[in-house]
Amino acid sequence: MSDKIFSWDAGPGAGASGEREDAFAAAEPYVLEGHPGIVREKRVALGSASYGGSVSLHVPTGRAWRGCLADGEPSWSEVADQAAEALAGGTA
Image 1 (cartoon, rainbow, N blue to C red):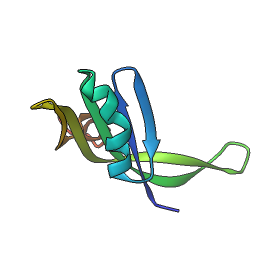
Image 2 (cartoon, rainbow, N blue to C red; image 1 turned 180 degrees about the vertical axis):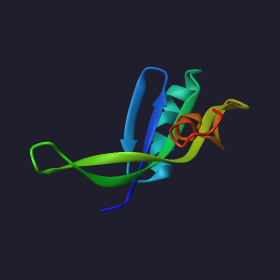
Image 3 (cartoon, one colour; image 1 turned 90 degrees about the vertical axis):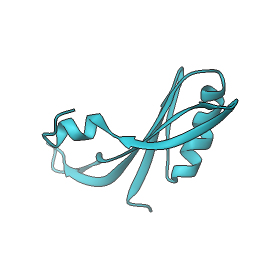
């Protein structure tokens, strides 16, 4: 099991994948329709649950990629993940 997941959100679609390239591929049909996309890297961790068990947590690492159309094709570039910066006490 990977210790990271890559969540994606683009227009009406959203999901998660164990690989960054798979997240890009899943989001690209929506980016092609003209919606911007975002892929965020998250670390998988276990947290304590109130009933004494464990729950899976997805903790933002701060790495993110924005997808948009460039010459009619989806293009991905790394950007600062403002949500992760805000959680870390940054000035997002």
